[in-house]
Length: 364
Ligand SMILES: Nc1ncnc2c1ncn2[C@@H]1O[C@H](COP(=O)(O)OP(=O)(O)O)[C@@H](O)[C@H]1O
Ligand SMILES: [Mg+2]
Image (cartoon, rainbow, N blue to C red):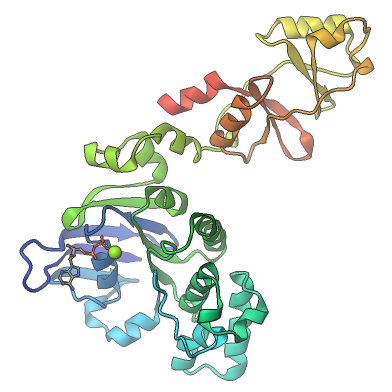
């Protein structure tokens, strides 16, 4: 969808080029995050795509057309652009701001209204905010208005330059989650710039790690970058806790869980003791026809004939197939049993996860 071919940019009066010789292919519907230290050429690269900056050399193709041969104004209307300082018009209401490009391209009132309502819904903006002015909004709300405005005419491509950098960490995390969720539904081709590797890991299908002069040090999926950083620069940029960050990307469903100790309520205390003895634990799950009821410990069996005589205790360390291994790890270290029990929807028992099993994923 976007193809950068040996692109360079040298600003007048500077010695080193801001971007030296950059080539990058971005597929349709993909979110590519450009990440790298301040001044490495991220913004310059992004702004060459919509021709807010003219490349010194090289070619940029978008959806099969050379952008340098298109009228820049036309080009920009087909590309959503979101920046940190947003650039909302202060004397226009939220609704009017969102409607900027639809108005420019001549949509009628009904169509514009419908689209504004639709975008407010998509971005979870309270309809009552639509009549307000940008100064009357919180930072997070303003940022969402900026995204809504960029999406207004449903452009196939979005360029987003540190869009969430100015808001506090809690709001930022919410905006990121919301954006990932929206992108799953709308599947735009997105180039997203950040200097925050964790944001990149969370948002990206693929990450391009840039060094000074727009040098691409690695262009790969977050999982691959964490598993196999291409060089010391990437390793250092990704930082400590590489293994833990990777665990956040792996879902429990992606790995084989282990069979844990399981008894049915109908089992005798003797049978339960035997099951427990075959595992290095002093407890067992109680499962009735596939449904996880809880757990009982060895000592509680004393003086009872059957498992059904005991009330199973609920698991505190309980994860589902959709949980990340990072969440499973959290569960494990805070639980009395030192393992996480895995269930599907409807409490269907799947197995257990131990610290040993999870550490295998950290080193592999
Ligand atoms: N208009 C300009 N004139 C001269 N130098 C510029 C201009 N814009 C950016 N630069 C330089 O180009 C390099 C890359 O900048 P930029 O793309 O903004 O980096 P990033 O977005 O990664 O922080 C920096 O060294 C910056 O100082
Ligand atoms: Mg920048």
